[in-house]
Length: 67
Image (tube, rainbow, N blue to C red; front, top):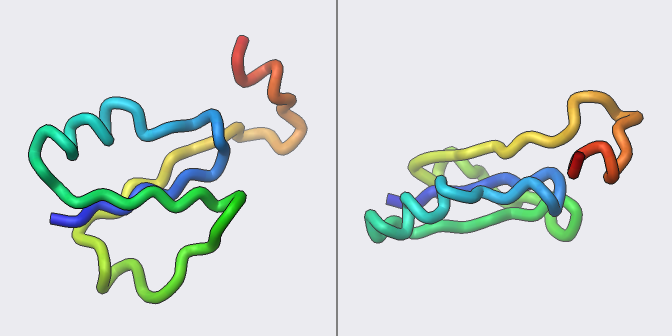
């Protein structure tokens, strides 16, 4: 199985989801939207898509995310 993680913010990591996937020997890919854009049709290249969140308010500061 191939699992693709879409990461919107560098401080929001896949955490235990990635560890779980590795324990099951699944193939994983992390797409950091700040440095790369998803290419191709993810529905055809990944069996599971995990979209990681970020702040819900565009005015949230980095300091507020870590408090």
